[in-house]
Length: 111
Image 1 (cartoon, rainbow, N blue to C red):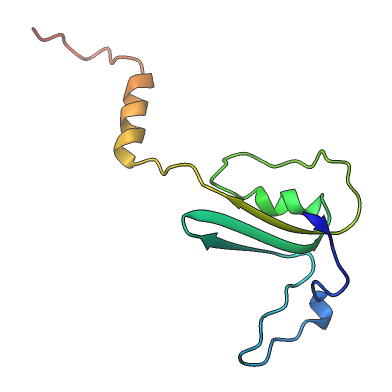
Image 2 (cartoon, rainbow, N blue to C red; image 1 turned 30 degrees about the vertical axis):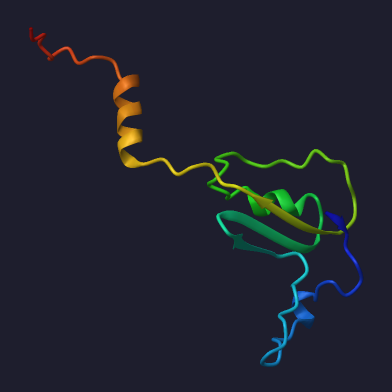
């Protein structure tokens, strides 16, 4: 994270698509999610610290809402890279549900 530099992004109303072969310029206030190997990346330009967490609140990898408690003001260019938690397989979720559910009254003991 660093303070946003002049020209690091284009405002939405001034954005123009790049010419063929030219790199795409970032749009101020928006984030782009990508991959670096198995890691997830989030890049944003011209973001306030209040806006950045709201872009991450949808993140199913964490399963939690992200709240800004930094107290930082201004605009920032942010790059975040993280390894998502391992995916839970359906059979793992079923086992966990069975372990946490109370025994059925209709089950009979077998011996």
